[in-house]
Image (cartoon, rainbow, N blue to C red):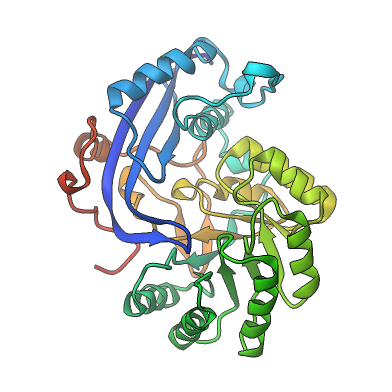
Length: 378
């Protein structure tokens, strides 16, 4: 199998709700799909997403991909490229002009698994078919009523664990949200909270003790302080032995390795880059550190979550992307299930290609209404 062509489709649409945390607020989605086409007709799919700003026009995305990425792909074996290591030196240490890397990695692994006629999770060594999912609201900017409606729905469809955003300047607001969560969902299997680096180490210790004294049992506090404050993270671990510190989300593989080796976290947070997630998973296993699978585009990370024995939880945030693909992963009774078809399991929807593609950059006020989120009541 050799790569002979590529296709890119650009999408831009309003989100069905504002998502974010104590540091950011996001109201629109900016995504491009990357399809790598092999000489036998097989297609590997990946996703390039920009959180905060629109991607350039589709023509410009294609031009940059052809200039910067395509010379290293044309005529190559997907499996060889998926496993390829480079020697980073000098000017060779630089990223592409657009966020192609993760989507390219996903598309290569998709093709490599299809070539072997295997689901990706099996190719990566997985033997189980499901992993526990927790409902994550990305809820910092929601009103109390919308907050309760979101988590009430999550509980009604079987979620038993929940993560909310904290990090408000007033800890009483965070305590209020925790009270609302428990009143809404009852006694959950687990509660996780995420401060997105909103606190200092000292604040974290004080606030976590206030949360504990208020009667809330927190499984983990995610990214409580600055990511590179390893000493501060260790102080939090020592000052809050009743909960776990879950960090590493904002680091690349190199930074995650440093965090693990510094013993700055109880858990390591990884996302949707197949190669990096597996490498970090192996390293975490050597250190006896659990891995949590944070948000990955359309939950593609379920393949790695199933394959890595250190992963107990996968994050699901009710983000409105299901209309982009043919069949999303099934989530039922608090578990997410892998597909059994070859590849990572996601295929670009022809309806999305036809009806939702936005080749040119549009102003926010020009965007069509948000697609219907089939995972939420409407």
